[in-house]
Length: 335
Ligand code: ATP
Ligand code: LTN
Image 1 (cartoon, rainbow, N blue to C red):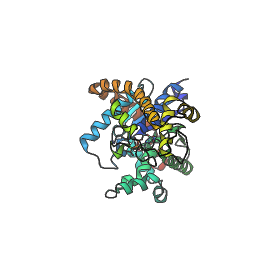
Image 2 (tube, helix red, strand yellow; image 1 turned 90 degrees about the vertical axis):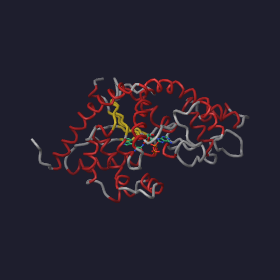
Image 3 (tube, rainbow, N blue to C red; image 1 turned 120 degrees about the vertical axis):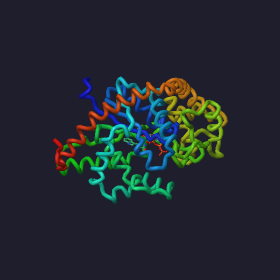
Image 4 (cartoon, protein in one colour; image 1 turned 90 degrees about the horizontal axis):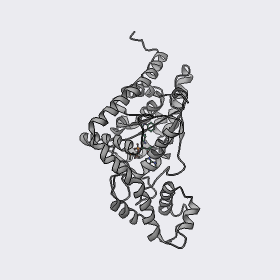
């Protein structure tokens, strides 16, 4: 298949902290897999989104660089995939403004993430937090994206991007490809090990509920051993046992085993056997990636060369879309 016939996939990651096991299982690992399945993949670090919550400057730079290195270590192949940093491609901010004017206050008010984050950061409910989904719609629509793989938490934002695209196309003429979300079956929502009713989130800090992809084996083992379960004791998949259900989902995502197979494997055994087995599966997945990461992250000039070249590739595509949209709206062309 030629590149221009391939369906395009786009996804992005906030660089607000070290990736969690949730980011890895729910997103990164699947996204990297798409490279091998004949899609044109476009991935980026959403640093413009990151500043909707206050970031410490030196830390934001470090997290961005480390996130870039981590994806390469996890197998992202720059021969096949475009991978850049959002703020390096100014068209994102440019299209976001335009789309702001095609999005209703009421639509943005209904976004679950806005409601959650404005509760969490009650002292900084800034306009960017509110219009975050318009920037995300711009990210997606700039690249004429067919599919957007994201965790279940982001589905609502992708649906809004669809609505905006349809509205714009309807008001003028076809301009944007209308994207579809892809939600993974396994690992779609990895929950906190301490509170299995809340998603594992890197912005919650590196506490016992959250596995960082750079945690060492002892830390991973300790966190799993302390994971909240229940007093029943059996490895059984049930909504009434959210802690065990979460651990089973993690184990299933890593081993490929079904819930029935896992129940059989641990039949007659307790959490004392199950928790370390889950931890071991996580450790053996992450260890080789961590080793490659340590090599890549040291080589700053290589990383810089990669993100610079990829920003240029992304910009070449994004520029065409912005020009097309501006022309339709009626802006006076400069030449
Ligand atoms: P933050 O905590 O700063 O809000 P995050 O970790 O929730 O960030 P991103 O880094 O922007 O979110 O997410 C990257 C991808 O990881 C997204 O596709 C998102 O849906 C997915 N993801 C995030 N958390 C989880 C989780 N706990 N389980 C599964 N997928 C997740
Ligand atoms: N909002 C997403 C990150 C994100 C994204 C995107 C995902 C920003 N732009 C475009 C898919 C497509 C998040 O918080 N996970």
